Length: 164
Image: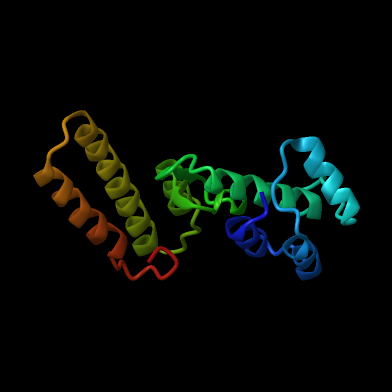
């Protein structure tokens, strides 16, 4: 389905303006199946399904997202990923393991940087363990504590600029 959500998805992925204009300007907006959609793309001269930046692929991903939204599917769903661009749509969250990996991969050059990095990694994994415990036994009080702790953890200033 080519609707506002589909077009926004396409713009966010930097699909070429003229391609978006052809899709947005065409009166046909809903397609019953993949064959009808493929024929529509062909009529509009939109090609390229290969690669993550292929125009037909980006248009197809956008149209699928538009259909999901139009049909009210997946309400409140959060996409959890490694922060790769293809997953940055709708409500999005970074996977804990991947977030910590960014800290782990930082190059350190001084003892202070190495200490800050190690401390931050320890704090992240400690927080993650507490999140898992909260999941087993949730409570309003614990939820509030974890929210406040999350903010303190990720607003922390260590003096290691890249880590901060």
